[in-house]
Length: 161
Image (cartoon, one colour):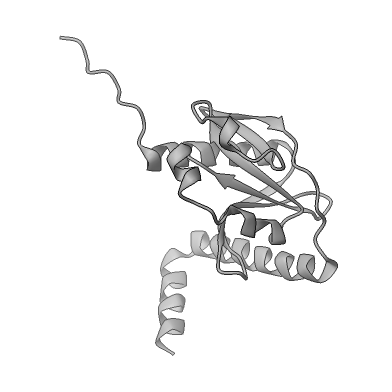
């Protein structure tokens, strides 16, 4: 009896795969990526990456056309990065994406740059505040990895105050 054919990945699995490939893409360029970063405007960047020159890049991960068409929040990320990219997989209809953004396409664990993002430099004060936010987010996640129980206790105690 033949094994059943693997079903295509659902949206959560597809999103996770694109995100992993996009993180590897960032690392290959020397960028320091952090996922799910809350921004001051209430939005959450799928990936916020710090570049070697101190610039910030947001990569907005989209799992399919429906995901893109249902989400009109992506323009709000421009205020918190020097360059905005979409990260999608090979099956994504890229003609839907705005041409004034960068484009990274994932294929398994690999990703390739198809279009460079135009630069729109952050104001120095915003860059400094974003760098502080980025560092606190990354350091907090490292602390949680090093001592998950202690970090959970600390967070619970802070919530109780």
